[in-house]
Amino acid sequence: NGAMDPEALRRRAVDALETARRRTTLLTSCVEEPELTAQHSPLMSPLVWDLAHIGNQEEQWLLRAVGGREAIRPEIDPLYDAFEHPRSERPSLPLLAPREARGYAAEVRGRALDVLAGASFDVEGGARLTRSGFAFGMIAQHEQQHDETMLITHQLRTGGAALTAPDPDPLTGPFSGPAEVLVPGGPFTMGTSAEPWALDNERPAHTRLVPPFHIDTTPVTNGSYLEFIADGGYRTPDWWSPAGWDMVRDHGLEAPLFWRRDAGGQWLRRRFGVTEVVPPDEPVLHVSWYEADAYARWAGRRLPTEEEWEKAARFDPATGRSTRYPWGDADPTPERANLGQRHLRPAPAGSYPLGESPLGVRQLIGDVWEWTSSDFLPYPGFAAYPYREYSEVFFGSDHKVLRGGSFAVDQVVCRGTFRNWDYPVRRQIFSGFRTARDAQARKDGS
Ligand code: AVJ
Ligand code: FE
Image (cartoon, rainbow, N blue to C red; front, side, top):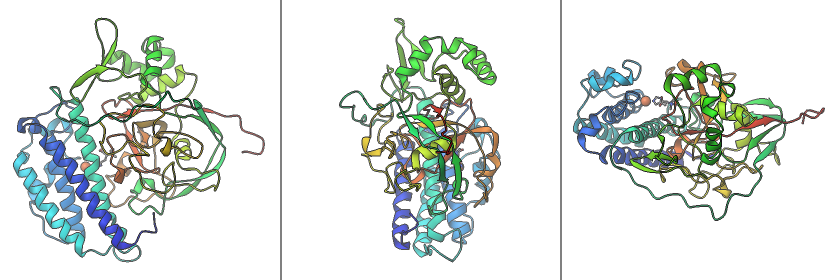
């Protein structure tokens, strides 16, 4: 959306910051104080750390870097630097107490809105940090990313439900479309140079030649995944990569995270404090890359590469152009995608016909993050901006790319070019997947 005018971008920035803060407030006020400072899992920070870290990042970028202001509390910077202390150590730090953390984040926000009101949102020229309101968009995206992290902490915490939300609409009938879609071979434009708030790792736009392939119309469902389990998926090393099989044996894995079998053999899952029967028509959630990879091999298929995923999500065969989203260039709406924590679960596979791609692929945006086979690597022409620690230090073979966002992702931080990454063992994230296979390339390359 490079065509937006500065005042529209300014309104968009205010709205994105306010939307993020409403969500942060919900996630940090729906449990009692002791639960904010507790460690619900060694994998996660206490919620009160995320809250003050959100404020501290906003202070560093919007007040100091953009506004040229003096630090409010410079002594707390190291406490909230994610690289100084691993998550498991954060509960023992002298963190701001919940009331102080709330006050600090609110004080920063008040001043940040002053800076925002006086900043140039011009789309050309001026300081790069504020061009098109980039820094404000970046900070709204940062807060929403930590809101998703806090939602993961909520899912890991034990005890009764603290959050509630309406369920997505059920399907009016079983999804009857084709199981897979052929994406034609040939070049397409990957990444973006036009999206004003795209982060450094999504840039620049560049051409990729992708051989033809088939991709699942919907994410893999719990029902299909249950067939893999019933067929001995977790007991058959043939389906697993060597490191994946090590993980199965070391941790005794036999199902996605948060699943257990009742006395009668029925699979149940815990979801935000509620235990329920695993719904067969919903995309599978809380699987590691290793499990997704093993399932795909069992099914005689493979995970899509990152470029295949993006071509399926953005390539319009009628024009040859790449669009911002599968449905075109318009922003997400509740009719097109399950985003923004409006629901606390993915929608049934086959939902959101208005969100499908021109080739008919559904639910690429929202519902579940989708593992791809690809390592997290820079695009040709990548330049770290505005700080190396956002993306550059994570490039390499340690992390796999996830695409498309989940029900826990806000639309400000979700688009066809957006890249997420994590370790292949990770399961507490809102991760699922779909599968793909090669298509026979014709001699003319199409
Ligand atoms: C892009 C989701 C992997 O949460 O570690 C938050 C985003 N970076 N603060 C993360 C992020 C700095 C990041 N992920
Ligand atoms: Fe952060």
